[in-house]
Image 1 (cartoon, rainbow, N blue to C red):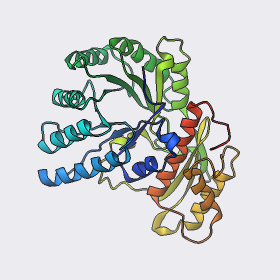
Image 2: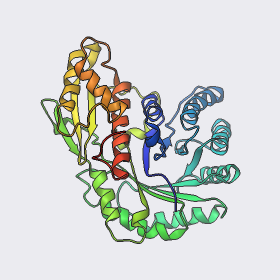
Image 3: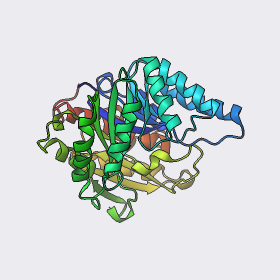
Image 4: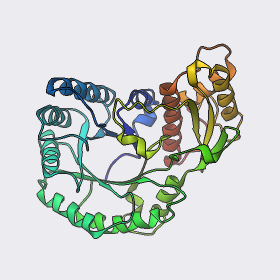
Length: 353
C-alpha cells in the first residue's frame, strides 16, 4: 500500500488554495489534499460552466506537480457542464476522481470511468457522521463490483465532525474499517475527521481559549488498536476550520463580526478572537497574534510562513499586515499543515529547516 503522509480535507476557496501554494516543498511532497467542490449556483448552463471551470482551474494549477483528490458531491453528473469539465480534470490533471457509496449511480460511473481513462486511482469517500451501519459496507462492496478491476482504489473514511461530545468516534471508525478494509486491495486507506469546534464562544474567556484536538486522538486510537491494517491508515483532517464549512456554497454570505486566529499545538487548538467589523481590528489583531506568539507552544517565526505571519503581525505597528478573513484562514492552515506533517514525520520537536 502506498499513499500520502497527510490528507487535509479542503474546500475550494481562495484561502485554502493560497495555503497549499505557500507550503514549503517538503510539506507539499508529503501532502495530498482532498479538495471538495462546493455547491455552485448559476443563471444558465454557460454561466455554470464558467463558474465550475474557474474553481477547478485554480486547484489544478496549484496541484500541477503533486497529486490530490477532487470530490464533487454536489455536482449533477447528468448535466453537461459538470460531466464534461469533471471528466476532463479527473482524466487529464493530477486531480483524482472521488465518489461515494451513497451518491447517484451516474456520479459513481463517471468518476470510475474518468479514473480508468486517466490512469488515476479512484477515491471512495465513505462518510460516517455517526454510527456505522452494515448497509454502508454493502453499498461500498457493490460500488467496487461495478468498478473496472484495473482501477486502483483509495478508501477515504470521513468521520466528519469529531468533538468531545462524540467519545465513541474511534470505536465507530474501527467498526467501519473492520468491514471496509477487507473488501479489496486498497491503494490508500485514510481516516479523515474534523476536530475544530463548530462554535468557539463557550471555549473563550476574555476572547482567548483552546479546544481539544479530538480528531488527532481518534486517529491515534485507530493506530493503537492492534488491527492488521492499523499501521497503514493515513491521517487526515479538516485543518483549522469546522468540518461543516466544507459544503458551504461559494456565494455563502455568512460572515462573522469577529476575526479568529487559530494555532495548532500537540493536543489543542489555541483560539484568539477579536472584533473585526468595519476595519476596526488593527490593534486587536496584533494583540491576538501577540497572545499566540507568547504561548509556550508557539514554535517560532522560522517554523512556517504561517508562524512567521503571527510573529510579524504581533510586532509591526500601523494598519499594514493585519490581514483579513482570507489571510487569517490561510496562515492558520499553513502553520497547521506544516506542524501535522512534521509530527507525522516523527520530528515534531526538532529544529526547523
